[in-house]
Amino acid sequence: MDPIWLKHYPQGVPAEINVHSFVSLKEMLEQCCEKFRTCPAFTNMGVSLSYDEIDRFSRDFGAYLQQRLGLQKGERVAIMLPNLLQYPVALFGALRIGLVVVNVNPLYTARELQRQLVDSGAVVIVVLENFAHTLEEVLDSTLVRHIVTTQVGDLFPPVKAWMVNFAVKRIKRMVAPWHLPGSVGFNEALMRGRRHSLQDVAVAAEDIAFLQYTGGTTGVAKGAVLSHANLVANVEQTSAWIGGTLKEGEEVVVTPLPLYHIFALTANLLTFVKWGANNVLITNPRDIPGFIKELCAARFTVITGVNTLFTMLLNAPDFKKVRQANGGALKVSVAGGMSVQRVVAERWQQAMGVPLLEGYGLTEASPIVCVNPLGNKSFSGAMGMPLPSTRVEIRDAAGNELPPGEEGELCVKGPQVMRGYWNMPEETTRVLSADGWLATGDICLMDETGSIRFIDRRKDVIVVSGFKVWPNEVEEVMMLLPGVKEAGVVGVPDEKSGEAVKVYLVKKDPALSAQAVIAHCKANLAGYKIPKQVEFRDSLPKSPIGKILRRKLKEGQEPVAERA
Image (tube, rainbow, N blue to C red; front, side, top):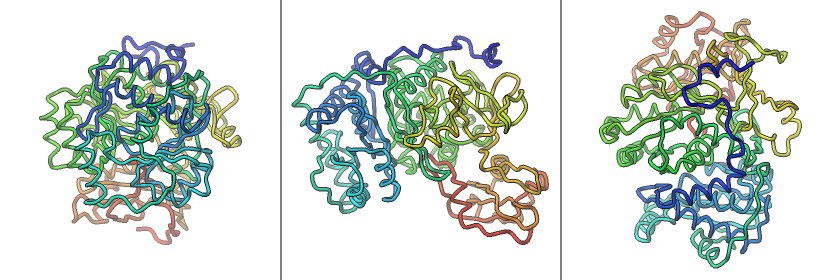
């Protein structure tokens, strides 16, 4: 029997995609560079590279890795860069010669970096010199034998490159001293590679494209093994979903989330390369005034982000200038990575005239699983329907499929689901069944149309005297209070009820009191869901994409002896 969501698919969206449209990402990237050769491909700080330039630079970089360094198909290359023009050049160069890319968060501590490099077995790393001092601390304990360093402006025109690099290093003093003997500069690597021919490498669908490490928010980060087939499938699935709205060679997509994160990697970079779009790379989205200037200059048609990022933009005094400058060009706004709060979505639609569409994915699924139809006229509160060629089930604790309307664990099957975790067979078996079903650890429900609604992470549920409290619900209520800027909710030990609800808040209104927060909660929540503790902070711990880290909030909590 056909899944119920297929009856409610947008017109023109197929039930299945052609998973063999491209043999590999290598083939896809090379064909797209040829097809859109004269179009702008990536823009950063006002400088654009065309698809032709990306093709040539990535060829040069691939030749450097292959011919000068002697790398063989299947070896791992780590990329430790923020959103800069160097990122797609290094990425495409590595993929073109069959290397496995290991994306590395530039903000990693030495301990985190050391573990990921050792676990992945990376033999080469491309690193922004702002973070080279961290690499220096751990280099001797890794297998890395080749280092390519780069500066922010290396692919800019000469005068701008000198000015930007001088400002970063000498004025802003953002580069700590480092010493990595034998390292080669990025532009030097391109020049050396240019002197050699690139030997063609046969890359198969099942070859590994990425070791994509999860954020580690639940403990030790794990490397999801993603094949070329996984990523090609997810690009095709996403393209089938958006095909009726976008036009090849005409779109401008804003990419504020880091490309080393799976969301931006697939949803922005890979998908929109297939569409011949111009990807506007935002290097530092936390610089909101600078981000707004970029938005005003871009006349963008697509933007992706997370709830916290859209909130920061909406709270910025100059955000009204963005809509004026955009002039109605915006077609699609997509939020993922964390739950979207209704108040944020409604403010965004009022400000930009386009709904904020929520989607759902996870690293282990390359990542996109569900998304709302682009034709939605307003925020639905759901994560949307499964993409073509994707099957989902809501299951109980015993693994039985539940009917629509009942809460359980979301399980996913499709061509985008990973092959497993790198060097972790037991963890792989725990989440991935022999017949390909991935247990996500997320509690969801499916409605009668097949649309999926996210409840919360299974691990984050708070049990108060036997009653379940989902942090997302309490956080949503918190954000309805005008004086609240950010909210995080966790469970803390309680001598009477087992657990109690605690809320961490960042104030928008300095006069906001704990008493006012509790009064607001009493008016909107059942008694057992009301926080017993309220703590105000200047900021909340977040992941690289802006997701509030509840694990960090919980660390060091003591039992709650008395109720508020």
